[in-house]
Image 1 (tube, rainbow, N blue to C red):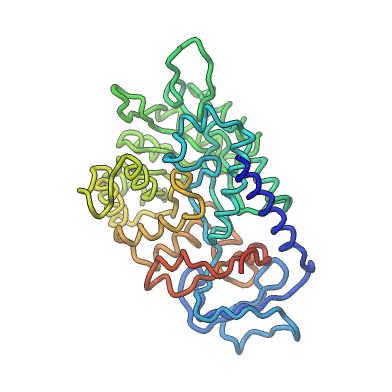
Image 2 (image 1 turned 45 degrees about the vertical axis):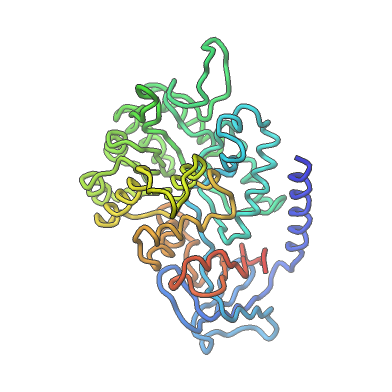
Amino acid sequence: MKKLLITIILIICGFQTVLAQPAEYYTLLKPDRVFDGEQMHSGWWVLVKGDHIEAVGDPSGIKAPATPRIIDLKGTTLMPGLIEGHSHLFLHPYNETSWNDQVLTESRAERTARATVAAWATLIAGFTTVRDLGTEGAAYDDAGLKTAINKKIIPGPRMLVATRAIVATGSYGPKNEIPENTITKGGEEADGVEGITRVVRSQIGHGADVVKIYADYRWGINEAAAPTFTEEELKVAVLVAKSSGRTVAVHSSTEEGMRRAIAAGVTTIEHGDGGTPELFKLMKEKGIALCPTLAATEATLSYKGWRKGTDPVPAGVKQKHYIFTEALKAGVTICMGGDVGVFPHGDNSREMILMVEYGMKPMDVLRSATSVNAAVFKLNNLGNIKTGFLADMVAVTGNPVEDMKVLKQVKLVMKDGVVVKE
């Protein structure tokens, strides 16, 4: 814990130094190439004024002021700030501490301290925005963390928060072996049309940007995954959330859970392990995106002893390959999101590397983590390098289209026009 606090102090002190810049300033970025959120362009430059992109394109068309700050990014690819589609900043890897023990034995103060460090690790890895899908027992502390970042008290990515997430009564953990004891739950329980309506509105009132619902969970016989909410309950929840302009993310790993979520008209389905060609066809028709969380599946299995490349491929990984392939065949919109927190924060690009390994074209993976996520999450001024957009950008050494692993070689990170890593 002492090491954690020292890390936080160093992060904050360094961040205050970064912020000591004039309110109006120009920065001219000179990379080898620019991925603008859609296409790759060789030789482009980007001019930033204050917190937004002033100009982008061929150097001959960029009129910079007499004395801008020039950052030479020779050998790099400049991209929009990456957008993590499925994060849990209030969790840390399960091979360090089990999920149950994090929820039950770590104080909310400790978990917030850990989330502060996780936010910094995420930002300097080039992920300038995260959709954080539930605090897992830490109440509404993600809304507070988001506020602290927005007020520039601490550094971190832009956050879309889901607060507590919504679960059916009796379905979610931690499980209680002594029924009369009340223990902290990893989500907020709800029942029936009236109950789920109230909980959706309550979470919105407490700061939720996105409503997260568990359409199924491991509460069946012998802990098998089984549907939780009825189709009617899900439809009402979606209606209430979307009437406020919010998107709805639904955890689902069963065929029936996915069917109910699709019928309800959710925005995204997380995991999607129960997907079939028929369900993916429906998702495509309804414009529902899939966030496949490939990295979480592989990480969880590795904690149980699986050695990738040495041991036989487990059934869970085979199923991920299957659903990812079928979703791509059906033309389903794919959101980049790894369920980071299950594995270390700052290693977010692990998901993008796996997306290529599982058969997605590198350019499509880059789009997924930038312009596609921005569109699905309604981030209208992010995810692209275009004139007038917010100046969130990351430069990596090399070309990720040729080798996605270069995403780990981050040379520069800019958020709101401020260089936070160079």
